[in-house]
Length: 188
Image 1 (spheres, rainbow, N blue to C red):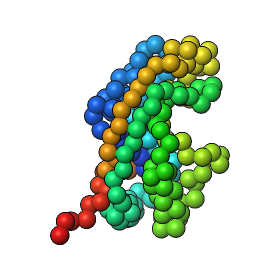
Image 2 (image 1 turned 30 degrees about the horizontal axis):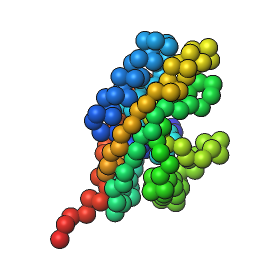
Image 3 (image 1 turned 135 degrees about the vertical axis):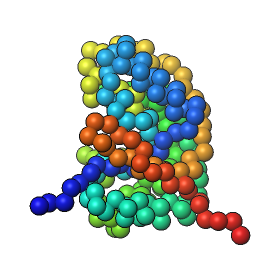
């Protein structure tokens, strides 16, 4: 019998008030534009796309991600309005950030070498950090209306990224399973 596998992803979950603001916008998209798929996960910036991992080895995964994150230095993330991937995705955009790009690249390399995960390149698209508000169930006609509403709207703010999160899928939605502090080495 094959071992049971669960689905995971690694992400940045923004702190308050940005988390709550993004969740409210996702609710707005559900009510106004009938797009609710983004509500199946907490607002997040994906660092490693979903992957399968043996359920009986979950503690190994957690320990490995703890080892990866603890020596890393916190960095700044800056939101800059709204953007889209036509014809279905609308999101809160994140300003290009070399340190965030480096973090994502390091995580992807770590997951390949240490965990044997080779699915981190989604259709060879470059890393584009963002908080998704509406996506796969947003009809194209609704996308056009929503994008017309949001393309000139402002959304600004910044936060200190000092932890990454492991999310786990429960069969219906994604939930934060564990948070890993960056720079968690004790002070001398």
